[in-house]
Length: 184
Image 1 (tube, rainbow, N blue to C red):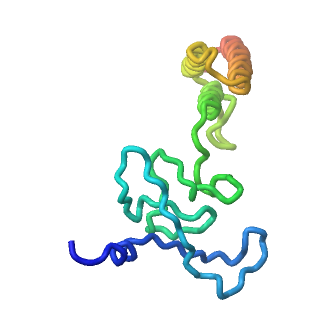
Image 2 (image 1 turned 60 degrees about the vertical axis):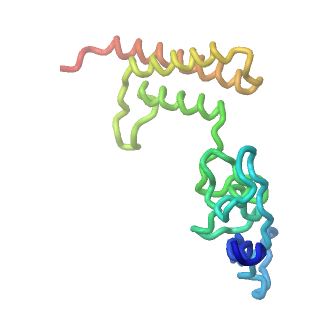
Image 3 (image 1 turned 180 degrees about the horizontal axis):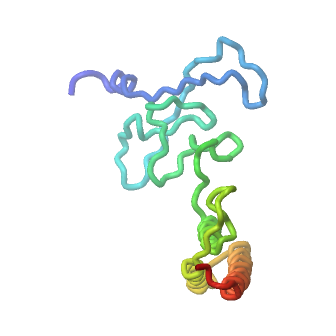
C-alpha cells in the first residue's frame, strides 16, 4: 500500500454537518455556525469486530443531525447514541426500544382487539373472535408462569393486572355472546 495513513483516514473520515438553526436551549444560532462540520470521535468497536471500522460503523455526535446516506443509520439491533436526542429520549419517528412490558402490552392489545373491545377503525363494527382472544390470554398466562420470579415488581404487577382485566372481560363477553339469539 502506498500513501500515508492520514490521507486515507481523511478520505474515509466521517463528517457530520450541523444545520440546525437553534441551539439546544432554543436560542437562535449565529449564521456562521450553521453548516459547520462537527468533530466526531470514532465509536469504540464492539467486541469481536475489527479495529478498522468504516465510515458506516462510526457513531455521530449525540444531538447532531446526520444527513441520510452518511452512515449514521441505526445498526440492526445495536443501540446507537445518535438515535437519541440530547435528553435521552428517542428521536421522533423511531420506535421505542423493545421491553418485556411492551411485549405484554402488545399481546393484551391484540387480545382486546379479538374480544371486540377495540374496533379496526372508528366507524367499523368491532369483530369478536373468542377463540383467538382465549389463546392470547392463555399465552399471557404461560408467559406469567414461565417468567415467575424473574420479573421486576412493575412488570409483575403489570402482568397480573392485565391478565385479571382480560380474563374478566373474556368471561363477560362470552356470557353476552351466548345470551344473544343466533343471527340468521
